[in-house]
Amino acid sequence: MNHDQPDLTAYAGRWVALYGTQVSGVGESPEAALHMARHSRPKERFTLQFVDDPSGQPLALSPLLARLRPLFQTQSQPVYLVGGAVRDALLGRISHDLDFVVPANAIKLAFAVADALGVPAYVLDRERDTGRVLLPEAHTSLDFARFRGPDLAADLRDRDLTINAIALPATATTAAALIDPHQGQTDLANGQIRIIHADSLLDDPVRSLRAVRLAHSLGFALTPETETAVRTAAPHLHQISTERIRDELVKLLETAVPHRAIADLANLGLLAEILPDLIALTTVEQSAPHHEPVFAHTLSVLRWLTLVEGAVENEPQKAQNSPSTKNKPSAPSAVNKILAPYAAHIQGLWQEEVDGGVNGRTLLRFGALFHDIGKAATQTIDGERIRFLGHEQAGATLTGQLLRRLAFSNEAVGQVKKIVAGHMRPLHLANSGGKLSRRAVYRYFRETAVSGINIALLSLADHLATYNGTGPEPQWQALLNVVAGLCHHYFERHEEVVAPPLLVDGRTLMAALALQPGPEVGRLLRLIQEAQAAGELATAEQAIQFAHACHK
Image (cartoon, rainbow, N blue to C red; front, top):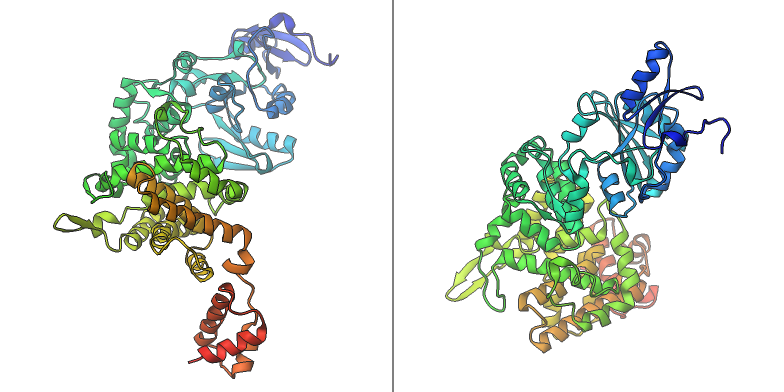
């Protein structure tokens, strides 16, 4: 035991106010402990400590809290951990997003914590006294805010859902210390999402999206009153910043069953407010071999995509075993077979983030969500045949507009547009016989770049959704061959076929052909690289001879 600290075990489960190392006040709340201490020492400064009850059930808390405990024990006001970190601790999950509330001087505390950890702090909102500490290497953020109201009770009542309105003294480690005025623990045990009061979502309409997202990320159900509140709040989403809506949409698509999450957004009136162009697909019919209207097909593509992703992760049953996908088909074993050799490479691509922090896997899911969004504008009906000529490019254009409206980065917009614009290319290659030439592979990746593998994976999900399974064996096998070939060349023959280093540079080419700088030089270099990729050129001399023959 540290002999500079008093033995407080006799006060387990209560707050104490300390004057130096002397206990000057004890109470069930920090306010009661301070009131007692000030009765005898009205002008002194005290530190407040919560004395944990060691008999309580230990909580799954971030190890960072142990590092911060000595600092929190020197504070003259209570510090509480609140929100998702407490909810996750009760679920046995360690959260990397820690939210703290204090009666006052939250920004000052944020900077003190940052100094203790040797990292920077930021002012998020000076008027609301909110600061943030970031630990990028640990993928952890700590937010500090002043109470939303005069005290902790008011702060918790002002939150969205009961499971997010549980507080824990920041130095405590057991469930005995939890402060749960709205029975959030009961709702966690019952697996339900419940609002705190009738206006919980109207107070901040983006909470309606969060409620749906939490239901799917936790496998919980919305209570009837929460469903009603979501529908009521939906028309008010236009009051919310696009960035906050974007962030919730990203998290929704990152859940284990994104097709269910998007379907709920549609059924609860939320999707019509944030992405009305998707809702417009609900009544757009399609010809065989499609068996669903466009919006229903889009949901099916998302469903099959999660199973394709499971094959990449070597966990083909992962999505199927979740409560929302019981009795649903798994990804065909052929998908597992062709993707298994490249699983680590594909996962590496998925982990790469573009500007704005969105990773490759989430970009793929956005591509799936928007892949047919151009069909509403391009539908033509010729007798019994329904066509959507040019829907890929029309969809890519519309996708760019929608993502920019939601304040996605240019890099994110560009990649999702490529996925949408290129989602039919693997099918076209398969319809050409399913045998890939080196030239075809080069041209494919020249157009699709880093999005080419995601497009190939999407094509599998698109085919499976179209037929609600593998469909006719010849077409399925041809598509499998194309996807396997694209993965093989991208990951194993990249410098040979996908992006071969040029045999000659522009300066050498201009000297050999007596060319002036201009577009012709670039055209010839592109032709040389394509011929290299096709295996037709191997030396600089051959490249120059080839350029001579191609020069206009």
